[in-house]
Image (cartoon, rainbow, N blue to C red; front, top):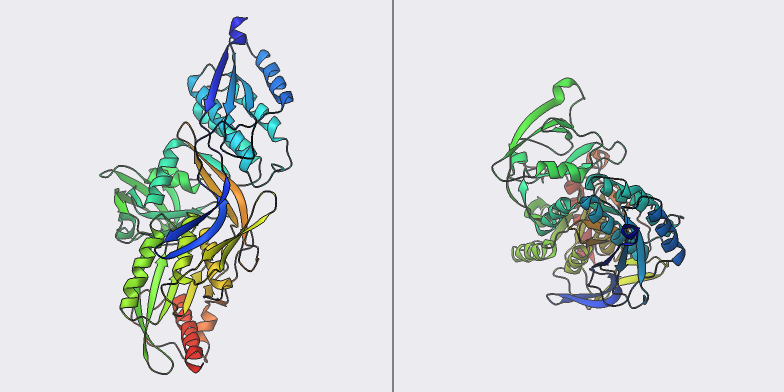
Length: 501
């Protein structure tokens, strides 16, 4: 029976979240916040697993086979609130690739246990969930099947945003955040109601752009493989690849009636794609009193690491061109790095305003505030939003709106009021955990609710006789965009009020 008693001691380099105060500075601006920060290396402080679970898990080991070895995982966390060790006994799989995922399971379980926003774990016994999943995983022979068991365990939390992704998918995620990738230049998203994969936008000058793929087109197949049940990240992974290779996509034209003629196949070459989250231009238009006005237009497509710096450069450049007002376009911006959203807010706000309020797992509300903020410009501002504006986009829109800095124009936002941490695990996979909820500075709930704009950009508004602001426009896509036309009108109103005062 010596095989049964073999022990494998694992000291996993799990990293645990801590909440702390810090000041962040970008140029001359800073803010104060308490949010869950990047994982840190472990210290000697540890977590403790209830003895009953250890005993019952060991009993499960005995019930398998004499060839099975009992393993002990010790997880260490860098958290001053935790001071005891966590010991997890589990049956070691004979398949080495499954054994690797078993370690990932323990690491995942421990991080969820200490940081997940819902301390009831969706009203279930989270300790027993580890035992149940480990027993199910023991019989498996492939890492793919084992990862599915972890995904199943996470799905039981009832939060679709808490998930694990493979090492390969995590590398793609990091590339997207850094702003460089090899692919075809498509942004896609899963439609919430149907799960269909829709094109959100194409990067200008990319292979997808040159092929005439448009926003609203539905992605049906990639290289002949149907995409039924495939999520957006998995589809994006299929589109990426080495420069010089090609990928064939089948699409349904989003503007067609749905007949067979609306389907088409396109073979796209993969290229180096530089993802700049910012595009900008100066829009000239005549005000109601006949003056020629310059409006600075800035579109922010994602909150990447470079978003704030690039926006700062764009605003400074347009300030030098003498613009008198701004339109910040957050339509179809799905979010990204929360810190990037806070940095962008600083470009537009002064003083010590609250940018967002976070709510931790104990229900404590923690405001995130500017510290002696100095905006780059105080010119009138309109922010464009729609149903594709989510997460960090909603944080930014809420901060600018609730502090009286901007008028919101467009359609109701997506409604993702959760803040997540991203942790790279020992095997190179990554765990996304919802660690907090947030509400706007005016305490408006956003999660599953969204933000309603001040003004909807509908054709009714544009066709109203009293809207004399509609002038003859060129064929520029910006100058014929209905939301931008409405935004210009709102800016005219703001400027006229400013002049009158």
